[in-house]
Length: 409
Image (cartoon, rainbow, N blue to C red; front, side, top):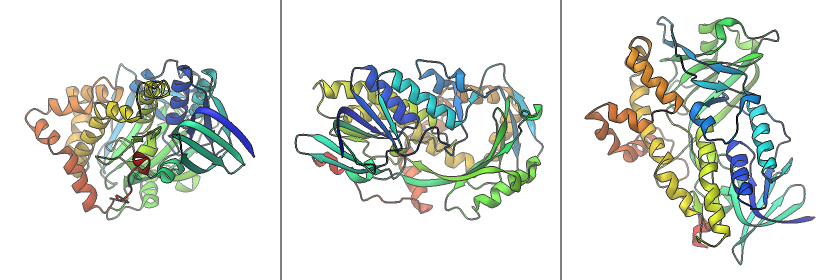
């Protein structure tokens, strides 16, 4: 058995884990980043990196950008498709296989050690406040800080007693390959199709040599069969379901108000903390934001300036979590009555420009509710309870009984 000692162990090398590792290492901590898969590896995800995502990083992601999106093809049900373009970049399109490997390289450049193919099997807090981590390959690691970035129901959160995020939505996606290059019809625009997918939408995202075609929707909604939804989307846009390659499904974890995300020298980030935007289903921004937020807290904890990583959660509650809870309220309104919102995006210039501001990150969901006038405060007041009520009615509460046992240590 190999015995190692580090200041920080990060489990999971997606955007949240690699960002955490880079932030901690850049502040002088010795960091080990563990990943169960061998890199590079594919990951079910649309791969869109918005402008506000990119702005969180102290380096350019240009080396892994495959398309720069400046417009959208908007369609609702059987209605006419409307194309809207912007003079500003909406989002960058990447492949997670390349993006994640690139972010890991940045963590290594900052001083983190990366070991892939190391599946973590045991996590334990031992006397003295340190953590012992064991891997399937026989590696044992001792660290003062452990960060779970290994997704919903990850081993770190499970072993330390963190509450698992509820799985509120499911998605299915695949690729249509164009070895000679993506046709002009799909370049620089995303296609978004609403109205036929309970609690969700369909999409076509352009990449370098393929387009990503997918659907997502509420997990337990009546009529939610993601394969049928995907077949319908393919029919709408002239694809054959049988032609899709790398067909993959995945669950979207969702935050619940009051979930514990940090205790003692441990914390969960990204999907492991349920940090997905409920309205869009996008998770890369929250992954980067949570990894960025925890870096200075790790530094303070290792220096003895704070006695736990709980300031990380406090920081998110003042920013990202307010957005997540507001998004939950807006999600329920939007998916109940999507037609008027999409029509305004298609035909009303100011509404389209506001949507561009939101996508780019120049406006927030909080800003949007303020623009709704008197309706905004009415939404924000009961946001948390509204989200819980809707979740309960859909039967997606999941396991609510587990709390962070680590907090009792």
